[in-house]
Image (cartoon, rainbow, N blue to C red; front, side, top):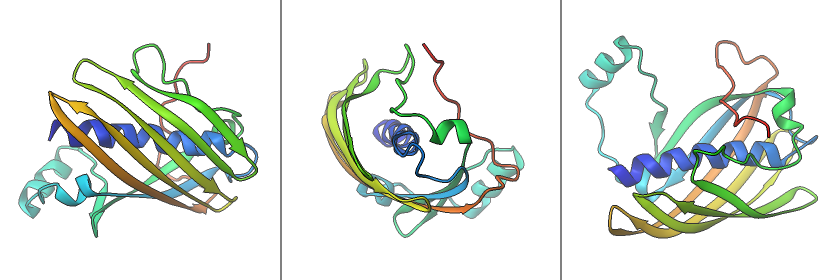
Length: 174
């Protein structure tokens, strides 16, 4: 389960990376993001009663359907105008390396060097003003166990108004 939590966290970094890589091409506003992976498919289903209790406690969970995690993300104009992926900050130990962009496609290596997880991966994707798609592959070790992960992310622009969805936290500028 620790691996799933870490990889889900990494996926959030990757979605933000995809947005930042699409400088001047993606529309700011509300996006629906879908992440599919074998790890998400393998996650145990939370009983409806427990889900309801979590909602009552104010815990928001992404919608899980068809082996995928679906949630909404708000991207500001400043976020989509960045020319490079986020650095992740000094405490983030998974970093983007060897970023390359050509037209509406991009690629980057991901290097994780955390006490409980070490490994490397790659991300490749493409975008338009209204859509994005990417694939992510990772190999490494988590809590002493080998990990191999394949993840696919798709996104579609829903509109310019984010409503009550807040933008994700971005790392501090250096």
